[in-house]
Image (cartoon, rainbow, N blue to C red; front, side, top):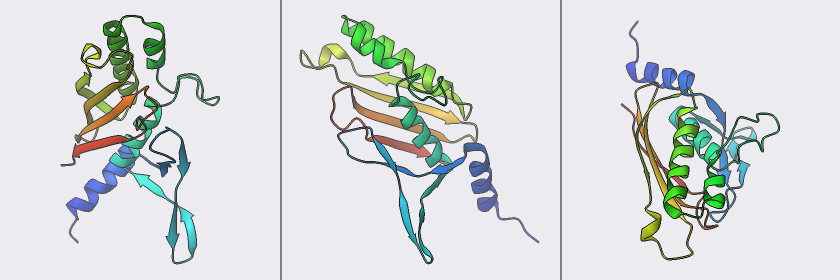
Length: 169
């Protein structure tokens, strides 16, 4: 009997990176998500995400959830909103967001290390615009490289659209 290396790798990813319910964005203009449904031969069932897709969905949710707002897990979420609202200096706000993103991503035990973290230069945006695009490249515990990009944090426009780019080797 021979082993299927691709199947073993997928099973390993599922076990290490988890399985969860699919939660699609309700609107591209908001961060609200709703449980997804899929058609099955027996009717309708809940959609499931697994492996790297599950991790990216979980990270996207944590980056768009205010820390302490989840009554079941007060430690879940993102502390960057304070940096965006309390700082008067755009440069300090940017560094506060960078620090909060790094802390949020690194807190997930499925992330081995952050490889790169970039936040837009607030001085290059038009006056009055407090939008910051964030790109985080990281390595998972399975050795996969992944990049999560969030456009327009704090603008009210398309910031729920978290794009992922990765290399699943």
